[in-house]
Length: 365
Image 1 (tube, rainbow, N blue to C red):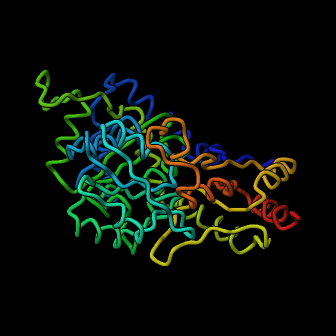
Image 2: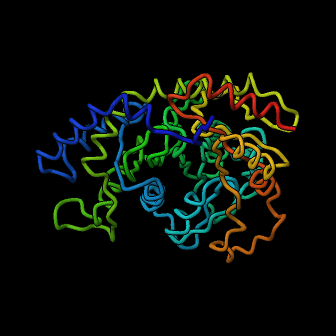
Image 3: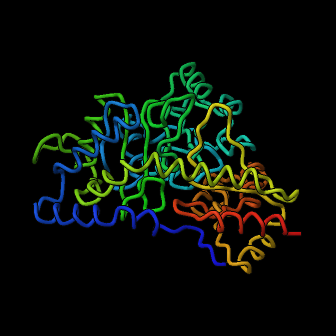
């Protein structure tokens, strides 16, 4: 049996006719930027997240960058970033001229450990970026408590957690602002690059809407040195269709994850944990093993696709050499990078495929 790490085919087959009809509709309107589809998607996604405002943008990295710009965070400032996340989180901080300060994760959830944040705060710290990694919300009550104490902004990186719940509330409504990615592989994925900022702050929303459109609040009037990062009509139209299916697709992921958790029984494999406060949406199903290379090869031989998120932690990437963070300084991020491997989890996986993965893992010696 061959099981790919991811397949969009079952999901896209279900909505193919609707997608093609919508493309034809947008195509025939001949209006491709800042039109009705973007406006409607922004309204619908804000409502989905339980927030007041959504501003579509080019991608998830831009979403975080725009939030930081919107808060005037820049040169000389510091921003708390989890040590264990995709590099885009840190890049957004670097792009505004600020310094990312890495804080280690909780080893059970892989999200930032709130108990370690306070000692990383200095008089230069302006914000905390809380990443909801793999589809599981970070511990937002504790993070918000620390932020309030030190008058810091809380920015959610929700790129992997569309629809996830923290104590019954959707991610995107848990901090001052949230950045989303709609990269095709996300639980809510466009058919290309796309992103969004979600917030309850109208002043911030208006500012970000201007910054992403060349700094313009009205045509040919530029109040900021802005950029160009607009969600286009075609992707917004596709995302509107997918958004209507997202809860169903997420529930399917939860069922697959539950089968993995209940079925995998191998002492060499550390399974992921769903926090008591969370409703995980399982963008990724990540296990750990000290023999990862052997395990990866074994699964490949048996036709099971996997991916490693992420094999080199940010502080050891050449891009961040200037921070001079030596190997061993962030041991949990390094341990996770050396041990994690993501198993197939996607809408439309058949029971026989799920059971095959479980069987092969349990037979691994």
